[in-house]
Length: 207
Image: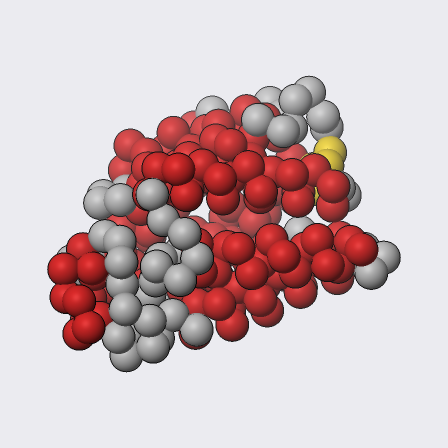
């Protein structure tokens, strides 16, 4: 089960991950975007950690909302609103629960992806973070159907997200700044899909 303390561990681990990977993510973004995705994600999760330390949330629902608001306020470009929407939508399934399991995690991820897709007007194959998120959701559902526990399902979703991010390399971007490059966007891994895969890997390792 995932409780507030475990979610806190994930959030502070993500701060470490995005700071460690900010150069890599920004290099990916330099090829097809503004070149600031890594810096933005690191700054965003620095703000998330600072907000948590300043005013620790009382429950899971409040924690997801706090993360959402911090990302929307501090992450530049499209990533802030998209990740902010994801965490906001996820938090809506928490209600007053002190802890959640695989069912709630799947429901939250599904609603979060729907929020991203609606805001970004993107779908799978457009060379966006959706290309990591949707395979991850499918893996979660398949793991549940196979009788796997939360830990096993999270591991499967992280692997699927990593593979989904890698699969964006040959794609031609159809959304965002990368789409301005047309055919020249092919041959580069999407930075948003990569940062989503990092998030899900951290979730598998820390939840």
